[in-house]
Length: 296
Image (cartoon, rainbow, N blue to C red; front, side):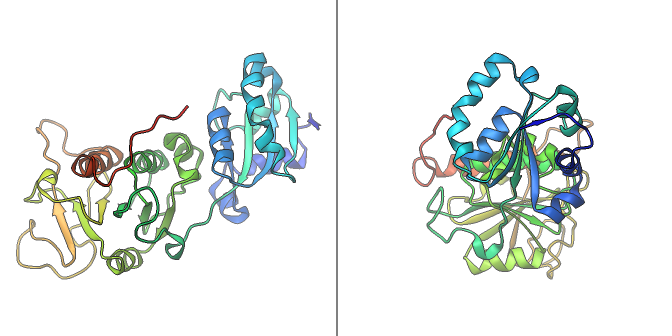
């Protein structure tokens, strides 16, 4: 089916999905480009509509995309639309769209849905917890690192950031399609982790223990706060054990990522998450981490 009018209801519906309120209302999101659409299909997400612009795709793009035709046809109710270049430009979030855009159903995850102990990528729990993240790109980059490190999920404490924001999807390279991302209160997340026997290790400015000096081989959740200020001194709101900034809060161990100083006083939140995650990978290598794989 060919679409040519900017006033077409389907075109207007796609444009509205660029806004967070509409994604939340509808439970849908936009995947743009060959890689993102392909990975959303690989993850088995429900396809509501596929929009192709032959002019933008070109002959090579159409040939590459033909490998996904069977997955699209397997969706049954999905409809494929041909659109003009002006319409694709109007619908797409990116300034230079590739000519391929899909509308998919968002996966809905709750704490109760998450893999049980011993299920998932590794036998030993590894979780990433983010507190106060506001930038979609940072959330997406953390999801990407979490999948690469074999995490069972990304737990977003008291956050307002949307995992299906186009910037989050792009930064994650599609990781948010398969990684459980759950937004919950700090209290809910901590209760969930403690109920599974998971240690909570939080990166804090001024902590007296280096992150490499802590055993990360067992069930553990790594916590990263906002990059501008780090975790609030009062997080998670429990009573301090002992005195001083370096003391751990009840049930939460604090670690530091040493820096060389200079004008830099903090790391990007996604970089800090990657540093912690792959220290856990280093410690687990050969035991609990699955064999390295390449993805085409």
